[in-house]
Image (cartoon, rainbow, N blue to C red; front, side, top):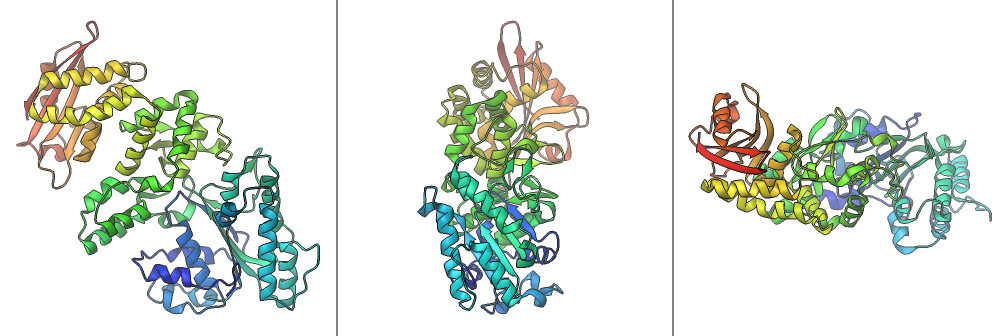
Length: 522
């Protein structure tokens, strides 16, 4: 067993000895690319979404130095007609770039990678001579010529050097040239049956062209046919919840919400598993260590980025064009770049059908709120902190307190949350009722039989509280808002709470810049 070649299947054995969600279907997709023009794959997703687990699984499946049949016998891949064809049939090279980044912080990092891997691989093939001027690729070409065996090359955290070293440094340029030498050389297709790179960022672009444009890329923005393997699906989490007697709705609230390709409901797998083990839903996101980067991007405030973040905290969505991003976290030149980085980091979900990004769930929302607090946005922080009391006052029917609270949110955030359009109106209400997301599913502008309700709060499962419908009017009176609510036909999800329903009418007087509130039972 080598350090970088034929490392065996111990990593995947550990996974199978633990709670394991079957993602072996990924192997079928990778198998379909072997010995084709698509043999070079770069699969990127955010931290704690199972990148390393997938790499260990592929190592165990392809590695010819071990017998992994029993590890896969009860998994989905075992039913694939190509299962036997590729099982433990190849010499596998495995490189975790982050291991080198933690050890070597200077321009010599690529020299260490090249020399350490070359020495280990030569030890596995002692009969193949190594020349003084050989680089790693030269040695692999010579081994392939002698054995006629193509390699599988698996690279974990491929972009660790890109995140650690700034563009234009010797280390970065050397690394990019090394990747080109390995995977764009004339002999690359002969030496490698397949290559699987994984990390956070897609392949870095130089000017307008990818440094490795022969790679097929799969990312949080463009997952192609890999979407189902990027996280846990709703059915997978539901099965886990039933098995461990966990509240599925709580898991949905905390960890669901990612739209990845055609998968409309994807969960953060690491957080789900931690919640299952600890039997407690809370934020496990802080352990990824990326909150400082988020804070920095927000501070840049490109083209009103702060406004967009607040709008998304309030439940809104923001337009984003992810195509201009150079796939380099150190090169952020626009709001689109910053939002795209946050998508790749997992702090934002992405809806490719509408080119919109959004905060996917409570876990990420709480971390984004922390980032806002770290930026000292006191008006927004005040609104978030006071939202718990606002909900309590609403449920208690304290109309004066509700009016004062809504007025405070409006006044303190007037620069970005003006009442000039319906989106801003809904944003004010959603921000004011931010805390309600703990106990309610919050719907902004929920369609009714006649028009839309500005905000509707539907109690979550096991929450013994009334549903709430909020309507805001201009220069009329709060009773008019209540009348408008009553004239609308409630959708079924509201009608079922007819006996436990609060109607909240709020009127804003533009001349006096004051609010009044009326609360009535439905």
